Length: 470
Image (tube, rainbow, N blue to C red; front, side):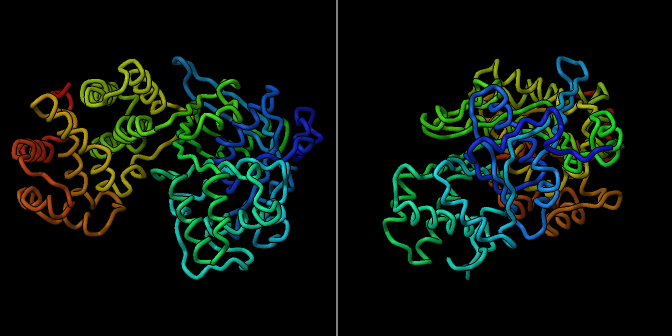
């Protein structure tokens, strides 16, 4: 079987396009999300730009990208209107690949490219952080914001502060206000390194730091299916990337950015908005909240994956009641939009091609529950003067799950594990405000119901209680 290369008949030569995008991160997510989007625009004649990939860590995949001439395949799979659907795209937009740890001169020279316009990144949630002791003359800096500050300073210096040579940043790290926080750190490094005041002013006036929200489940390289898929494709692809069909990108930026990035014209589900808070709230409360409420109950029942649980009619109805009857009524967003998103959530959870481990969802489940579910419980009470039945049950199931810790490998702050696992339910209720740092004042009815449901779960298991809820 031939190695994937530009000789392949479907591999349009994107190297003829100018490099408009610098992409920090060569992992599965960015390749199936950002590269996919730029490639879609190119294929429709809307963008005419290529991507230079920068490896943010000493170890990475730039050597494999080089070996494959920057090519790789994205296989998007899932249910579309209830039907199994597979869409395959050979991604051709990557024109160069740089490891700044071994090719720093090549990396910093990219800053002198007059065609460069966009910087996309996904350096994980820990990537947009400050690291003390870094210097402008490090080759390279360790942190992502440090590397970017040095890159921007080179660009500012080379183009003598030209206002039209600023860059547009589209960070994809899963933290709130990712663009704002990246800009804050860049300015902090600029100040520490005692750069010119005009450089800081150039960052403020000539660069755009968009806050973004990304949403696509990317499974990455399919170890168990790789040989079969490559035979089907007719070539060997060591960067084969699998993901779901669903795609969503919310970008908080000036209207001028939308004009430069015709994502929607290319048919991509991308929204430009002055405020992406509603989209973030929708995802956290509906998608992430549903995951957090489903996992403990489904694990207690004996399931191991999201797909197994959602293919059980009981758990599917459990999710439907939770989303449509309890979460959506607490959100001040168009009901039709929320209904459509919730139906998509259930379909995504049912994706037969994605094996999503329930135990993985319970990672740091206490902090997730506090941010994703408790605000909905409190808002529901405030609006309707009563407890939401399914969400209240999920609270009891969470405690029961931690108390069954011997059956599972719990991954959380040790204090959270010990508090829920080793205390009696009445002690948990009495001390939870202090232990969780949450104001539960006036929640006697909630506590009484959670204590009752916990006792019933312990005695009868989750099935009869969920059936009663439905």
